[in-house]
Image 1 (cartoon, rainbow, N blue to C red):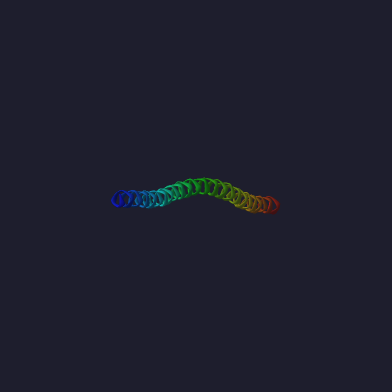
Image 2: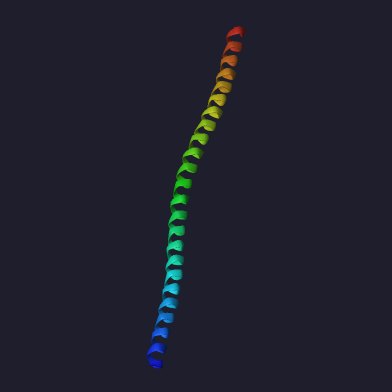
Length: 88
């Protein structure tokens, strides 16, 4: 009878420890996978948003610089033409 009780207690303890370890390992694996997926998705979203914002800012700056350069060149050429015309 003592052996039966001992086996029952040992089995119960083993089962409880096994379930606790499996649960902890399972939770750790799920958290790691969830974190990795979350970071990957987060990085992809961040890269997409960052790329879009960077592209918009870059295009705006290029447009402003281009407009300023065109205006300056246009003004210089126009002034030179006016000076030549006035010299006649």
